[in-house]
Length: 517
Figure (cartoon, helix red, strand yellow):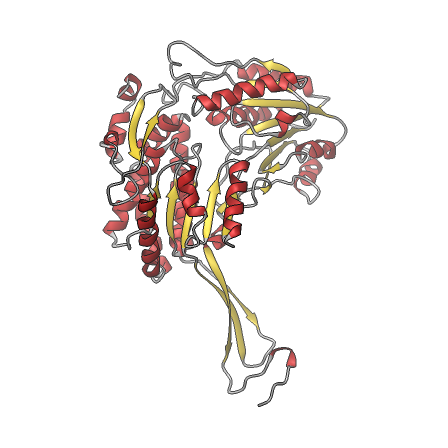
């Protein structure tokens, strides 16, 4: 255990989460020994080895899917409020273990400890939502055109749900799916990121204890571990009717094609290229707060991170200078130290992508406004710490059109009215999150109108990053079109059925058709 891990209580957190033996290479996610290859988890905070797990083999996967399929057949018969009670107890455990789980998220992924705690709070919030939902899985009744008939629609559990999550939110996105899928009556198989395997194991341990105490059928919460090859086992499996996948656009296209080839269902949460429009009527102070946190929070590794700042030419210099000044105040370092604002990138491959983006924007004609660079020396031994950078750029630059998962913010001007800014904002293939900073009601309403933002999330006077549990989360265009979390996102985890009941002694046909025998 490293000095930082000892100082900030990581050893105790691992113990609290049932991960004391993660260095022995034993199997995870299944109840039997695996012969899969060993996956080592290194912290981007200090480069230290946290623990080892074993990857899921094809043989392991077959046992997992068979168990899940069998368990689903019983779990779907449990009344939804009883399933909700199990989720409530799981939520109680999350509340009890919020601090150690948040600390592990921070140490294994690299986001600040406060963000780690915030991520676990999202798990708690979605479980609260799911418990209430377990008594509200409603359908509709409607009038039949035939006398003596009644029509209604209802929702039934879908089956085994496959969940593929990314490293940047190693626990929250899983819970967005599982909490809802569980109360809907589904079994869940989760492939967490191979970059953050220990947080996945920790969550599985928590669920397994609660489920065992409640005699939940085996297989309702399962974990498989490994790289894309393990994910492919699910995406190509007809026994998994729904695949919920979070990741890059490139990954999403591969998943979508594989699932569509077998006529399965996909829920895709892919890349974002999120912009904040800053109009002449913007509150500059709030603009700086929203833009800076949106760009550097989680070291720019959120799908909702602010990538572009589109500023009206009349206030461009004022906003530019204010943002640049704020960047000089950022403290970069160990994310477990709450005095720091920005932690490390996930690994050295991410650092290379960051450096490439800065080189590319200059090559295309942009100008670096706030210098970036890789930090070295004491406290930065992992090689994953970088300086958040700002570049003046044009929206059509190739590098600006792509999502770079790093703290690189592109700023640009617009002239005229807000529709010109919207043309720039919408002029990318991604469509996840967007925001406008303005105190002008007409500008705000145009931004939210049918001719305004084309993103799944559109905010006024707050930034692009983050989302509340109560609203559906997701984006349009190449972001994938999926919706998770609140509102009616639960319907994707169920199958819809229309029912017609004839309570007469006759059998009238629809549209007055006669068929006498």
